[in-house]
Length: 438
Image (cartoon, rainbow, N blue to C red; front, side, top):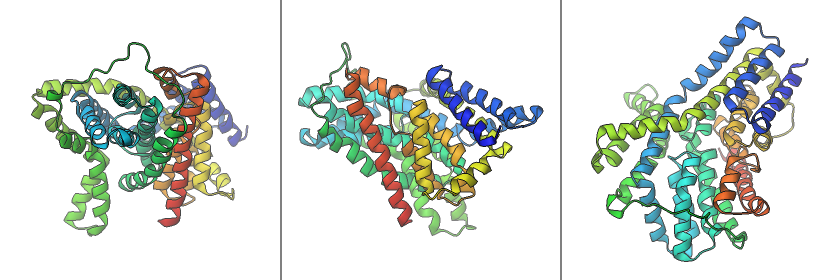
């Protein structure tokens, strides 16, 4: 069987196993990778080592960032820092600019939090604001949730963008900087602007949903809360901006490169957060460590999905299919960034999960970077944008939104699906503009 046909069957099998049979993505990736390896003619005794190498290489560069990111996010929530950020921004913007306040709140809160955690955290805040200011629910909700999506798809240290950075050997600081530039127009159009279009769509909180805010006296200060939540982004941007100002072989250059390493950034951030949001707030060190231990469970499934995608990618590399894909794609008279977005969006429509879509597409289009010379940072963002497109009934986020806001299917498509697709398309447009400028 021709190798590209084997690949097409493998992708179709992934979609069927994950979207229809509801097999866990890790098992789906592993089974498909092993079967594809045999179909592509890899010697039987070489297959286990290929799978192990793919898993080890992928997790080796990502485990620290993803686990520490989960720990930071859980501490930000439990300490009340996320609540303080939301309260401060809502009070500062006022009722007339509430959509913008919620967009900024979602963006700041979304940087350290995984998407599902951020969603569940923001919903009570959204309905508290709706009740207080008598605003249409979607005018408040869509800006906040669009911001979470932008952070989830485009910005390290979220799992998929971080994994893509490792796959393409991109500079994480530049990726974050470019991602911020792309995020702004995507967030504005999909959030405050689009929210006005669907303001009349009826939405309401499900029965029994009650916000359970921490008492004001127990919250950390606004400056401490925002500074700690944004510290990973701040460190990555600062080191990216200063890296070119020092000689590569100087002591200062070595220090900056050390501090720019994503693992170091996240460890430093976690140490700071342990003090600012933990010990200085009266919590004991064992108590903070308990929060961190609980966070590991939250991220275990994500690590497994990333591991499975690494095994699949390694099979493509060792079998030689990776190179043939690159040659085939390079013959297309289409911008590689558009190719990457299209492939990712197609996988996203099939499997539902943005993370799975991004990681699957990365293995397919990697030759466009390694052999075709496409900009690795922009390729990360093009795939990240594509992973947000066309959210529908096979996406958990679609059902979270529908149920939390008590919407019918038609209204969910009209609001949620369109919002996610706006983020995706505007994100691609921003990447294409950046490609002409850098």
